Image (cartoon, rainbow, N blue to C red):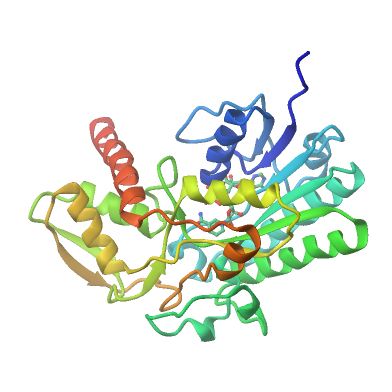
Length: 328
Ligand code: NAD
């Protein structure tokens, strides 16, 4: 007798983390429906069904959220790197689009009695005032309040965390919330202005001629922690299989400056370049995940070295750069 596969919906399946999650769930034997406003740009999705549709539209949400689903992973959001979020030019759209998606999805999950839902929040919810130094001691989950994110993107995430928790309290929906800290890896945005620092550093190194220069925004001493996609998904799946709602940080504790990240990419490529600092959006000065809570409650935290993930990411981006060169 063969058992029925568990059915999951991945919202934002056409995106970076969503695309990788579809693959992970398929490997685990799930039946998967993906939904996204766009097709995945970099990979063929192995989902059983893929709906191209706008989750701001309630009719689309009613179509994809069906009563046979056991799990929903809500990753769809209007987002981008510092070049998109911190200029202020996209604030109204970021807030309206992402909040509408979350309001629609959680309400439809309640109506269709889907048992559990995962929501991807962000390190961007943490107050700007505790991230002004490069040696951030670590962002513990309860430091989120009193609130003071540095972007409207962060405020929307904080609102939506509260929205999911309110549905859990009032309607018994099982929710699991993670605050992702700079997730990176292959098959993600690597050019065009929405890419984040690890991809941007890999691209700049791959594009530059040996002995050339690369540009870094600000003085490059701003610090972050970056988590490779596979470990991010390990955390998501463990959290979803637990009885814990969170929010929990899913991030690395390995702090690195953007200058050192650039040097790491050069080192991997075997290319020495001069760093040219230019003015550009930088976000907060220093940000680091603190994994005390997730380690204690879930008995797990990411522990792979950054360099390992950077090497895999550089290899993939180098191929994209060479291909676009031949195409152009
Ligand atoms: P991504 O931009 O690659 O994926 C988001 C997807 O949502 C995109 O494919 C986009 O087309 C889709 N989308 C946007 N508006 C939509 C709409 N109206 N209807 C349907 N689909 C829509 O980003 P990602 O890096 O994969 O991030 C996934 C989630 O994780 C997002 O919610 C993001 O805020 C969160 N997050 C990511 C990071 C990170 O470092 N990547 C960090 C913190 C939080």
